[in-house]
Length: 306
Image: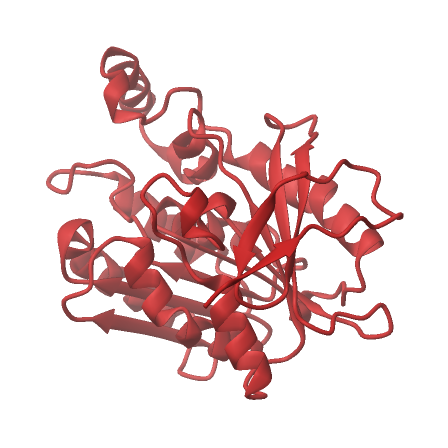
């Protein structure tokens, strides 16, 4: 059973906290409402603090995308959630992971695809292909793809230059790379991969669940995955100081991912990654949903935070 946990009022916050409550099984969620940015549109940020959180301890930080889907199914569009509070609480209680807080960054539904699509691989595509992708989206707004120009470099600037300094100054965190992680699913998996490659001095590990390697909904004659693999090959950080987790299911949208993930795995081995610092897992029968990610979230958490 989940418990209703009111948001705490902390005097050191300079941003307003939401008056509502979230249903959490363990810990407390604080909401930074409409966190401002000069790089992207403002959005809510939810910060999960474990039971017993203390200013006298130091905590690793896990940044997660699609923050509105993480904690409370009663407030999500599809009535599913990642169950981050349950999984984190259970692993902490069992001593399987280090002390950690979770920062959930809400997406902007209108710009999610453009915020999460790795920008440098996109810009490596032929200009006519870039234009066709953007123009197709304008003609087919129901797809919700590329409703604006690709803006993931600015999204990462927001995370690294605005949000992380705020979190580190207002919470009792460990600020170093080896205690800073990033995670997401689908397009959130792509932007997590991109974040650790673009900012290897900031992030020490990335969890990429059901990574949406196609980038769009086309799988045949699609040059986008190869652009991602070429980018990975050129920008993967040092395996001695970084960790990667990838996975995929075999149902619904995840059914398309295996051949692409196998190519990504070849890049990983070619760049010196081994079982010490990289995992790829296949989950037979699992689909592309928060329910599925909830069921296996403990795997990347234990790998990154043990």
